[in-house]
Amino acid sequence: MSTKRFLLAIAMLFTICTGADAQGFLKRLKDRAINAAENAVTRKVENKVDRETDDAMDDVLDGKKSKKGKKSKDSDDANYEDAEVGDDVQNDTKNVKSDFVRGSVVMFEDDLAGEQVGEFPSKWDLVRGNAEVAVINGVKCIEMDKHDSWISPLVKGGIKNYLGDVFTIEYDMLYDDREKNGASSVEFDIMHETEPRDNELFTITYSLSWDKHTFDCSYCLTSEPSFTNKEGHASSNAGPFNDARWHHYALSFNKRAIKFYVDGRRVINVPNAKPGAGWVTWFSNGGSKHTYMKNVVIAKGAVELYERNATDIDAKVAAVEKAIAETGKFVTNNILFETGKATLKPESMEEIQKVAEYMKKNPTARFEVQGHTDNQGSDAINDPLSQQRAEAVVKALEGLGCDPFNMRAVGKGSHEPVADNATDAGRAKNRRVEFIKK
Image (cartoon, rainbow, N blue to C red; front, top):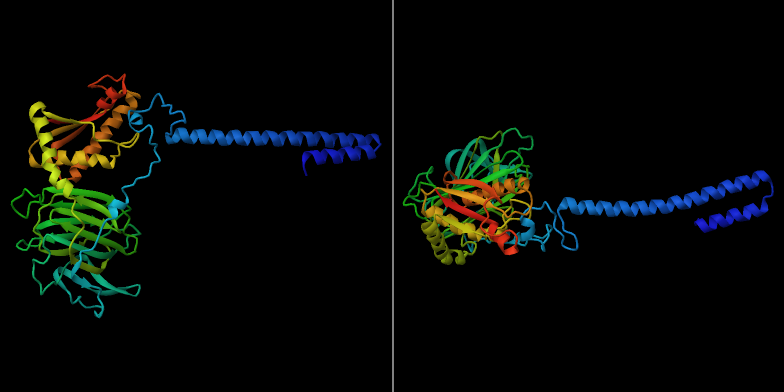
């Protein structure tokens, strides 16, 4: 009932009732109705204010700008880099990292059809340990021994030079460590035909334990004369993959580029590795339970090579070499980060790539990697942020094969400006990364 109708009903009762007690009772009803109406209006206003206050607080906590583009007095320099973008911008590079395509000509495929459970799989060879055909949830697979299992597919009668320089390898793997009581460590090894099993051309290792898994790739650099010294390193965190479910793993090698995928998502991307692949092995050991594998496919062909990087890299490295030869350092404003964070933007990798190539061509050179900001914001914010950003650059360089021993991250904050912080152009110059040769 609306307030007006309620008051009208009271008035009608008031005209009917003539006793003093009835009149007093009706007066109290009228007063309560008025109070109820006033309280309803008050609650409505308060609720609106609460919602607006909550929205405003969310904007503040999320670091969003006002509609007028006003910047916080204590914001760091990154707010000026991305003032018109916003922190909720979508990452359009995600699909790029799901670019795996199987090679066009299948050389080896094993779905274990017709295999006898409990026997060693007929299309495989034993390098060391033990393995046999098993059934998991009605599906045949290879059960790799929990203590030591090292196996290799038999391709073309067991030859050791079937991979070549352009190929893909796919497989599914399952492991159950939901109780976190000690999972297996897996090696996925690409071998040169003349080298023994412990001298991999490159290897991808991962431990199926805990909640986050680190995938590591150690590989021979193109400049190395042999197939045994794996000076290159790349790594990535993902997971979990120890959840008793099947997960799909895939490798693409194209002349020099190593790309490794987990469930369709690229986790390793090495641009320049030494070619010469001959054969492949899988090694699992150290776990408290068995590792299971199925659906292994090896094919000729690979993910398309990113040729632009290869053709332009020499000119880009030459610019780094020239700057270091003349000044002892390389200074760049092209390494960018997400607002208020030490997270590298994708477009920064092209600049980091050319620095990485210089460092790999000069493996004995040591560098101080310095992060610099402008003076917008307090030192309490900018100093640790600049240190974290310098560390992020070092980590990216390490992922591209640079020796972390030769790099030291140093955050300089806004204490060493190279331009006037009173202008936008000056602040842009002060936001930089410097590579100082030591």
